[in-house]
Length: 276
Image (tube, rainbow, N blue to C red; front, side, top):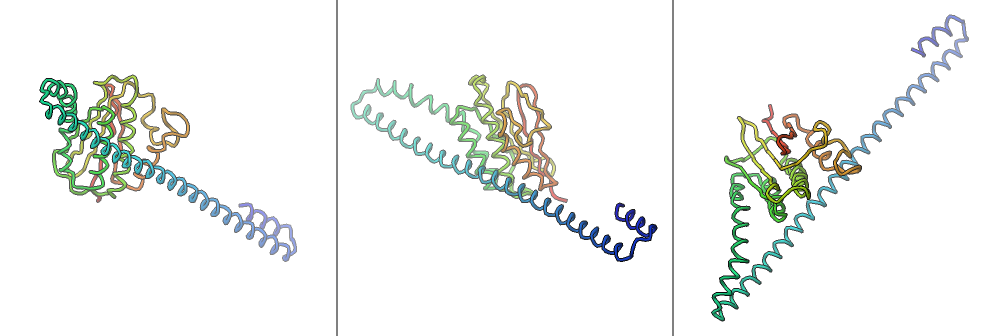
């Protein structure tokens, strides 16, 4: 508009034609420089967003690697404790100290057996989940929760063979959701019987539905703001996990993530619809 007004004004005022051409050329050059500057700004913004996302993904991968290493160390510790138990029992048997053996069994072995039966009775349902990446992350988080004395229930009633999304992306998102649930259940205000985590993988028509529910005394955050960068109960510069999950799911038009809070329980539902 400014260019048209200026050009019209110069013509009506009978400016020299050479001056009109020069002025027009200057306007064109200025316009091109402005467009180039805007394009450069957009490119820089996209690059910064990409670098930030890659940084978050790298940190998430580091955390996952640390969890795998921790799981390995815990398994080594379990093996060591198991050998110690066998050594102690072997000593009592060799000395025919049946009273001490009975007491050792009732105080050390029996409670451990009960804990494993209660915690791992649903683990066999993982065989219905035939997607290796997701089965691996569920197992890893399952063991982590049990080691933190969290009661875990798992529900996978029907075989799940495929879903219309990258399994690695879904495993990453589920890992973030489960980490948040486990972290919430580690709150000091929760009693032992309140530390409950329920995970279900269901089929609804053609959709695959992941449900993660954890006990939560109160939920001070706004559900619609979950996934916003730095929005967390832990203060500033936290909440990166949910932000990464939200950015990942933006690549899928067939996936719906729905958080809810009701009756002192927070539920994260992830529904994957078939692509049309």
